[in-house]
Amino acid sequence: MKKTLFDKIWDSHVVREEEGFPAILYIDAHFIHEVTSPQAFDGLRKRGIPVARVDRTWATADHNVPTKDQHLPIKELLSRKQVEMLEKNCREFGVELFGLGHPWQGIVHVIGPELGVTKPGMTIVCGDSHTSTHGAFGSIAFGIGTSEVEQVLASQSILQYKPKTMKIEVNGMLKKGVVAKDIILYIISKLSASGGTGYFVEYAGSAIRDLSMEGRMTICNMSIEMGARGGMIAPDEKTYEYMKGRTFMPKGKAWDEAVSYWKTLPSDDDAEYDRVEVFDAADIEPMITYGTNPGMGIKINERLPIHNEKLSESEKKQLKKSLEYMGLEEGQPILGQKVDYVFFGSCTNSRIEDFRLAAQILKGRKKADHIEAILVPGSTQVLEQAKKEGLDTIFADAGFELRGAGCSACLGMNEDKIPPGKYCVSTSNRNFEGRQGPGARTMLVSPLTAAATAITGVVTDPREFL
Image (cartoon, rainbow, N blue to C red):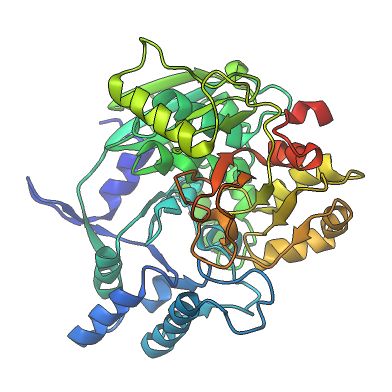
């Protein structure tokens, strides 16, 4: 029987399954952070059991950490307590922690690939929905809840029902100024924020194959934003080139053997999926969201939607509520909308390639005077690489503040929040009400669009600067 990439990995990791019950799925790598792990560790403590595989458990501090003055005590009480609990739990249970001050500290979905923990053919979980990022390497990676974190810590396995499979093909050449973030925002705008519910998505097609590994991670990262369980892309030579030589990758003969296995993973010809969607890359433009879920996106040169007979009653209510929250009007152009903040960062767009994209536009230019521009690398290694390439000088000259690694203003869980009523053009992944802080108004864009907008102070088509 011909199998998909997903089927091959899933079937090889099932420990046991019975009709009508979830499968027991073995987990190769378990990433943990300070937000969803304290209760899980407490559950182990109460039951008097250890972490089953400390060698397959990877810990870092990212959600609650400050991005300024990281050498000082954390100011916010809850954030400080959660980070301290992670440190305590990792010491007690023997889990290695890449905490503040560690050269490998960073956002969990950034450090996994850059350290070489993430590999094709793996099952990967973390108490964070954007674990789907790791699927860019041809792995089954998905977010789990706190009770499931405890399951994996205790047994290195998890109970899971097998999801349906969907293939999303994007074929053709991308236009100038269109990058991976635009592709995934476009797809979500077409399928909606719930269009992938119940599915595990495999992305394919010539436009996907042409993307760098950083671009592929951006695509898979936002699979969850259309309701999918996760996203993945089959490994190829580009994947192996990115991975080779990284800290936790196999070396020598073991590397050659691993590559031989990884080459068996791509979906078989004529493998069947439960659903297939096909898109033309030529139809994709720089994208931007205008509402309060990632599916509410338009091409940057389009006008906001209006209430009409094509919309259902629930869609009309959602559109009205979202526009009221965002302070926007139906039918208005999004170009030229004044912005207050520009945020570069998050597990979606905080890798060195994202910073290089921004630098293309920012070099020799300055941000608008009224713009607060925050640039937060996804890891300490990304920060050091940016400095090595001189990108920090470009950003400083442009008036940007380059900070330490962390999740930062992606979510209102740390000190980096967008004030109520302020507009933030952001390279992050979610635009829900209050996501970046109570009352904050978020517009999701690519690094190119964020850089162009920072210069003009209003929503701007990046192609004007390319």
